[in-house]
Length: 128
Image 1 (tube, rainbow, N blue to C red):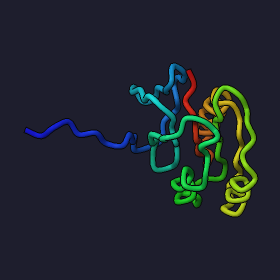
Image 2: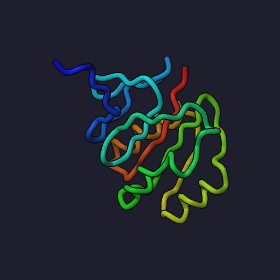
Image 3: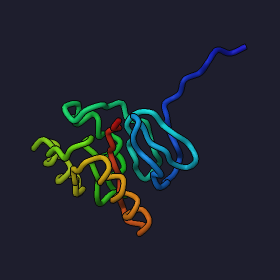
Image 4: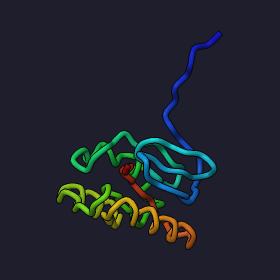
């Protein structure tokens, strides 16, 4: 008998986010505890908890899929916090408009842009 297998959280495809809070998100009749990275290839668990953890490595998947992303919504938690200058420059060079906002605003904006079939991605810090 095989032991418990823990895999990286991944939902293959795009889906609107139904709810956020209590340290996680609900989407596609599932729930996820922790932060999320929503890119064209799917929705992934994102191992970040606060904006101070933002770095180039944290956004690798966004850069890998940049050909299909025009706008990246960055949910910075309960409050809007600006992105560091080096990350803004990295996204600009990749041709991506990175827009930081509170996680709640990012979730709402993501759902609207997704419903309009826009080339949108979201990096969302979970909030309590």
